[in-house]
Image 1 (cartoon, rainbow, N blue to C red):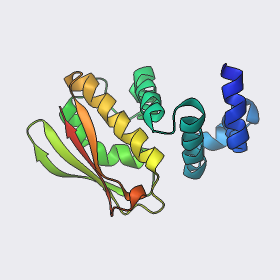
Image 2 (cartoon, rainbow, N blue to C red):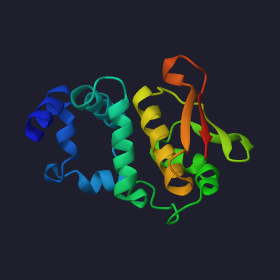
Image 3 (tube, helix red, strand yellow):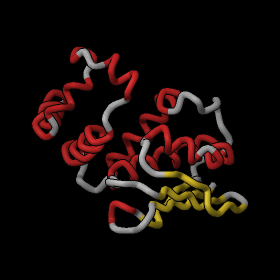
Image 4 (tube, helix red, strand yellow):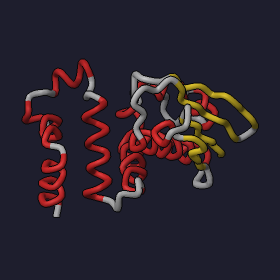
Length: 168
């Protein structure tokens, strides 16, 4: 099954093979990062090939990334951060995912926060969903399984900003 899924992914996004260590791009990607346009295309194709085109598969991918090791995605994140530290670090965490846009914590209350990403150019629905799921997983590690993140606004769908409501 894995080979068939990979073949379908390569059919949809041939450049995905450049991400493999055997492609010889590891050094370049380690210095400059993976181009966000390629990453977004891979996310979209993965949701299509591996999921049901409903972004649910991307939430599973995000959870798996954080479960495998949040420090691998966000090396600067302290071990076992509190929910408050995740929220306080939201602007920085966004900057580690994408260089476009500015993350801010707009409203902070006890056990909840409104998180906003503004000034995105070329916003991506898939990346927004992946990032929201990553924040949710970090919050669940910190505060328990009832922690959640809701998407209130999405720039990729025509809103002026991405707005997430985090509760823990």
